[in-house]
Length: 115
Image (cartoon, rainbow, N blue to C red; front, side):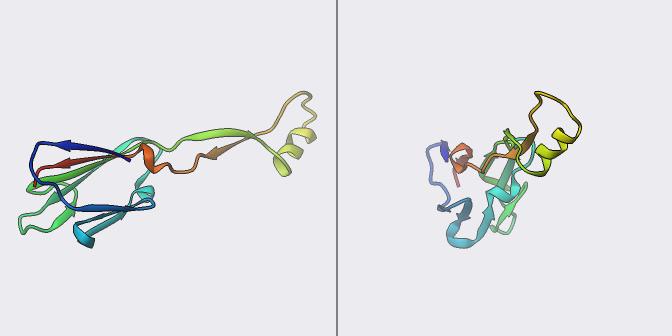
């Protein structure tokens, strides 16, 4: 994961466990992988007016999480999909399947703001 520090002040404590980000010793925990979509997105982590952490806009920015879009690859089909191509008698054609590439936490960017 890429870490970017905005400003020279203190930052919120965080830890990473697999694809899970834990802020401020468990005050806010989220699985980044579950927030990935077919488009890139940015999640805002802020403090609300009572000082608690919240996902979405609040009183003050704490962090932003930039999640890249899902990636896909095409692989040669085996089994049923390959039989479907063969049954249509399409010579020299290979059945291809679209598969999601595994989530890669190293492509996520965490921007930390002064608190």
